Length: 328
Image (cartoon, rainbow, N blue to C red; front, side):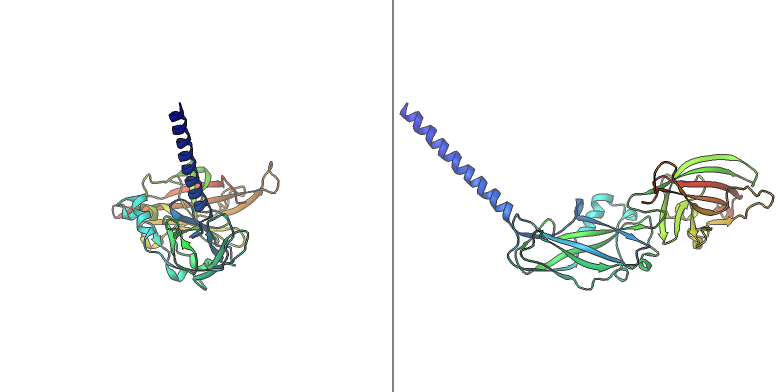
């Protein structure tokens, strides 16, 4: 009996030592200070750039893990990262290089400094590194491509760097009054098409709309929407709609230089004063939701495409597209 009692006591002591060791490890991890770039899955930090935001100021967030305040100021210096983007592309697209994300050209953004300081004694160990992207420098970015600013922590003046969060990809999303790319903007389309202005074949679908400048969007014409869009098919099937100051619109091919699509904006018929498709953008107060404006485009145009070296017949389009999720 005495032997059994001694064994039980030894087992309890051993368990207590293990528990103390586990607690010590937990305490160490809980209070360990590690500097990192704030990001989410795959070390990606999402940034929405608005064409209308003339301020053009954005920030990279830097923080420090641990439960307590930092005791000393920490100077953090960043640099360009060369590791994450290849990993991201291989993980998401394997060997299909046509879909690869690309680095945002350096002339499109500006960091006044690549160094910032985390201040000692702050309740939230959190700091911002400012940089600028002027809206004019967003022009020409393709809504079909993924753009990143790749960054990494080069050095810290104190503590250590989190090996799993020392670098990040800042993903650039575009937004204007009519559409955005972070959450694809969809419009419902209702209208008519035919081989002449008087033919009334009904069309009704949803279509994705992308921002391409402060006052312009890109969308597929009519009911066209390739199942597997390639750059060639996009240039052959999409139009640019530019909104003027008086809310009239100009309709042109998205990429006229491709030479595979012709678009002609049509005038209102002189014998039909009640013609609905007046090539205009409208904002209409919602009947049921206070302070909510519904957006829609009323369009009238015709198009033809290059097919096997010759132009197809003209297709006439009358359509109303209404935004499913209006701008906030």
